[in-house]
Length: 271
Image (cartoon, rainbow, N blue to C red; front, side, top):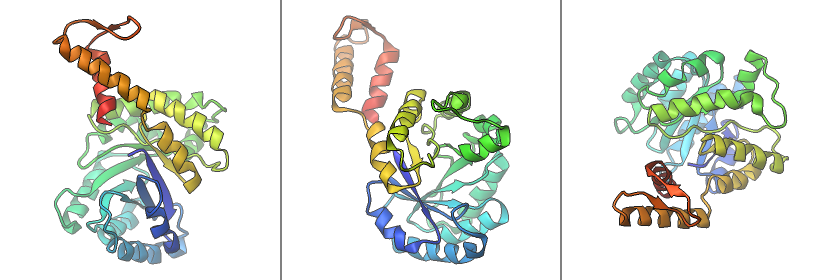
């Protein structure tokens, strides 16, 4: 999954339109995008609509933290929901509570996965434990809240966030789950800035990004889709390596290729 498009849970007129678009996942938001007065009506509307969706694997829901989130989970645990995004996740205990609720309401045991949203310093420090919790599919970083708490002011190249992002990538790899989902970029009109930022995330090990506007989705999809020449090179390397039966080989420009390079090539082909 390369792109996840956030859609406000109180805007049902956007649901089908988003699902018909190019985003790999439509992430209906019951948390920050919904005013407090609309929380219950949005929950009912999302629950009703989700039961009409027949496209498998493309619908996620971001639920509120705490007791309100537990009510969200009970309402939206329909067969169409592939995953729930847990706002303000800070501990494995929270995910275990979610696991118990989903187990009571989902149609097929274990069918709904979890994407914890890490938005605090405590969450980042606990990332290696959270990544191993039940149902966790991949992690996501919520950098706006994180920066506000820690006091980080990112510059144009976002280097101030590189260490935090890298820690979440490592936690994901160590837990053998999917690479993390990159943070949203709020200036949805600056597509060149989005491209540069997403390339940095890709180089750091992210393999997808959340979007807040449909215009961002094609850019994100492009960055996280391997180019045909990359795939051709990976296929050639793997074929040459297998023909050599595991011995040392050279690539097309004479560089030595070892098992680590082949592992990267196979991962690329797997994507």
